[in-house]
Image 1 (cartoon, rainbow, N blue to C red):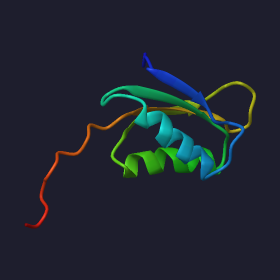
Image 2 (image 1 turned 90 degrees about the horizontal axis):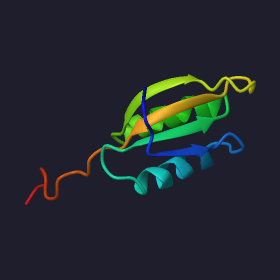
Image 3 (image 1 turned 60 degrees about the horizontal axis):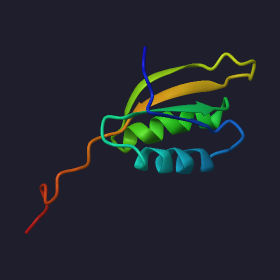
Length: 91
């Protein structure tokens, strides 16, 4: 069982607002904390996990929300650790 630090219900919103609100919620958490996000089916359910993974966060699980909403999902995201300062840039 995954124990989220926070849960956000974004089912009423469309993309790209869903990812903007997900990003804000993740910014409020510490590295390694888990965020549970509820999303409507379709584009939000497909793009939010993909966009979060592209930013380096870990998608722990995606599963149907089971609340009668067609295609609605819950997504558990683990916030990534901050990047090390000064890592790899040219002098």
